[in-house]
Length: 158
Image (cartoon, rainbow, N blue to C red; front, side, top):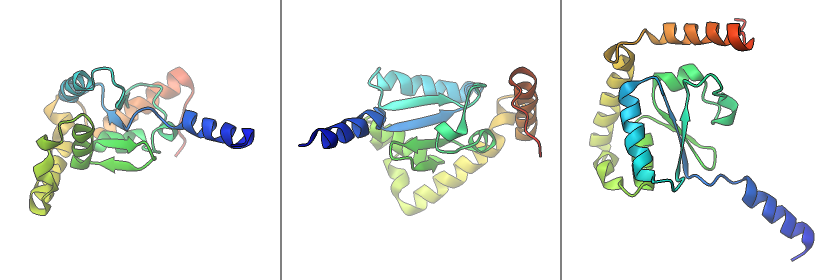
């Protein structure tokens, strides 16, 4: 193999992520954090799942599948190692499978059960903020934007 081919191969390997899935989660949601803590324990430091807190002021959508804060807050998203973005119950199916617990969500692969699970998740996503005692999505997004504008000069002009 030529040194150029070897160098290109080395560069490609070094740019591929070590994780298999990147889970975007709301670090200010107590119920979400219970799930994340559980999944982090199951990952056991293997780095199969890259956990990304979208509530962190440094969250940058361009680094995470282009999923902006408001979209990520509306429902759960994950980014696969190839850059594909998945959402809703599919996120849980993928994460649990990667962590060796795919059986937990395997029944949701059945068309009718999957449709029901997605419908129920949609209800949860709609009411998650209220259930956890937080303001509306619009308020959360506005407060974040004001905070980022005041502290980091990252002001959005609409």
